[in-house]
Image 1 (cartoon, helix red, strand yellow):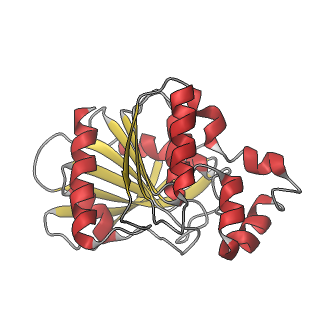
Image 2: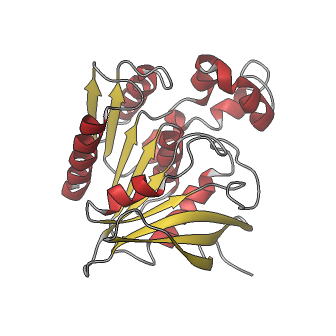
Image 3: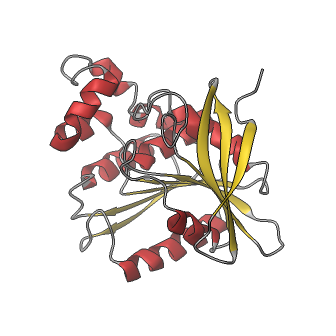
Length: 258
């Protein structure tokens, strides 16, 4: 019987950065074989762990080697799960249903390669995954949610292009199965988060409304949690390249201070 977080297969993966080694890893999550991408700086040293939680659903928003290598180049060992049902992994992507455990057990994968400091980064849909991981684990050093989803019900009403997929995956609309959407919404459980949280969001984001960030801030404040907000009135879901690079560097420095 293989345990959650146990690695069952590794294979070398082409890296866009000669200073970063990439490995595709297959690991166990709730009895399913799930895949993800590991990025390690080749330079000797002990590094903090960085759990990269991708956005999107199924093939949309898939983990990009260049993005994972970009974070590893900041001095982290990075692991980015694809989530179940993706890239040959078993099971099916459930949009923060059972697949949240693919992120939870990815921490155990990461710990095999890094020191004891584990930072979580979630972008877009990855935000909801990052919050659940921080809720369900007590060994997290910091959490960053960038343009992150925090409310599954709000996502259904905001994203007309995702409604068919969400109805199919979740089992109906929020009007028909409100409890299924509430069960995916981490806002109601933030009192269990023990790590400081950084919320990054652009006011012009049309994919994930700024209200997701504001609601998260409200719930964290109400639960007397440590958090910080970096809001920007000029930017949308994807920041321009120069601003993106600067924000990546700044958030990595923030993590290292925690």
